Length: 183
Image 1 (cartoon, rainbow, N blue to C red):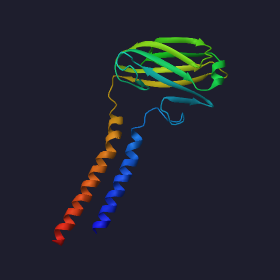
Image 2: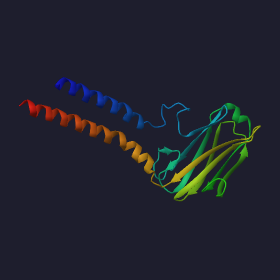
Image 3: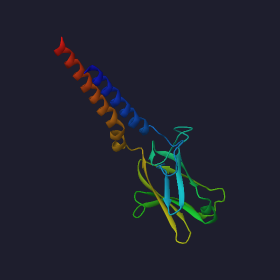
Image 4: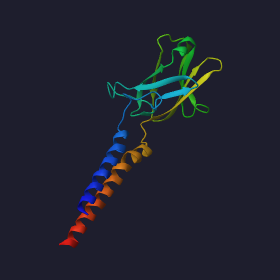
């Protein structure tokens, strides 16, 4: 009985650590297909990075901008074919269809594969549209949340440890109860 309880506890801990370790992954060592900052239309992919050196000198983000203020947006054209077509960038306050355009980088050729723009973002929702003027035109959409709490991410990051602790508590309690009856 004790051996079975210990084996169960070890198995549960191993499963918890396996799932929990995956939630801590950042952008490094992530394939483009798994990167949340990469958008794909057909064979073509772009990646958006946002920087706020006044808040974090080396930090980058994608859809969750930690603070309002001057934000440097960088779009990497991951496919070399996109470097041979005009590509532009627009930032809208709110929805791309209904919002006000606050920043625009006109469509141009980018042989180095990098488009950059600077915008002062206030707290709220923004849409970024990257348009490649190919045939047909390619549109990549990003929804930015500036200085907003994402409760869904918080719940997702805490649910596995909470369930793990509950299971561990249950196993320890089961073990203690079985020892009491033997005494």
